[in-house]
Length: 124
Image (cartoon, rainbow, N blue to C red; front, side, top):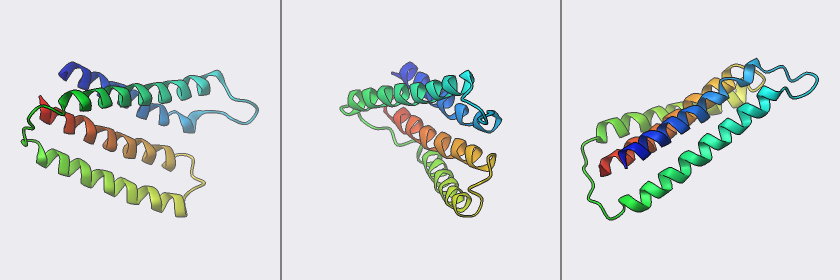
């Protein structure tokens, strides 16, 4: 189950990293092939990681929980909330900036995904 949790973390990271490629796409004439690849990798990584996390959640429901990573979870929760506030500020004031929005979406998604991966490690 640890291996599946690591695989889901890698899939989530691939999904989040695809957001960083958005500012470098030239979307003036038509969608380049790399845009389709990035979209496929984003959704494939996100969906696959979620399926693995749901599977692990069902499997770990019956196990006892070791509460040793509460500090890490709280730090990730605070990071997620701060990135969420930053995302709202960017959407209000800098929504036309093509670099800030994908970078903030990357940090927001990565912190949320890491929270769930770390939460799942309590069961191992």
